[in-house]
Image 1 (cartoon, rainbow, N blue to C red):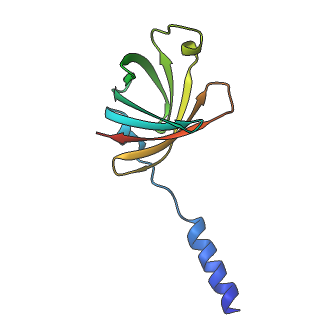
Image 2: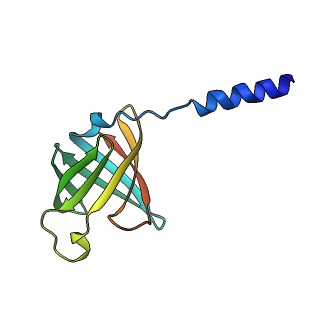
Image 3: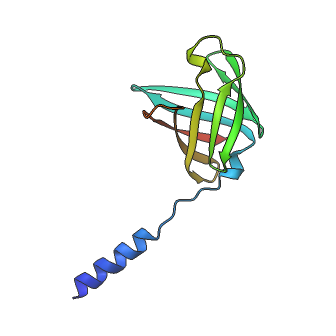
Length: 122
């Protein structure tokens, strides 16, 4: 009986756990992003206001428009795509936040394959 009660209480406590998601803290500012794709780590720095994101990656600067779906999800679109791949919009979902960092997942709009990464506010 004691084991059943302890198991039930443990389950109850774990099921009530909510991950922190203070997404509005990350709508503006300067950031560093890290993602791993096929075993290779990529680092990008960017600055974002509510509707524009300017990224610096491998000495290339790109500008993206941001359309917020809700406080924790947004769509990025390259404002000056140079090829067909850059024309694809990217859906980003903030999964959790902690202090100056958030974890996210992203995918091209309409595709199911998702990648994950993390962002740190500078």
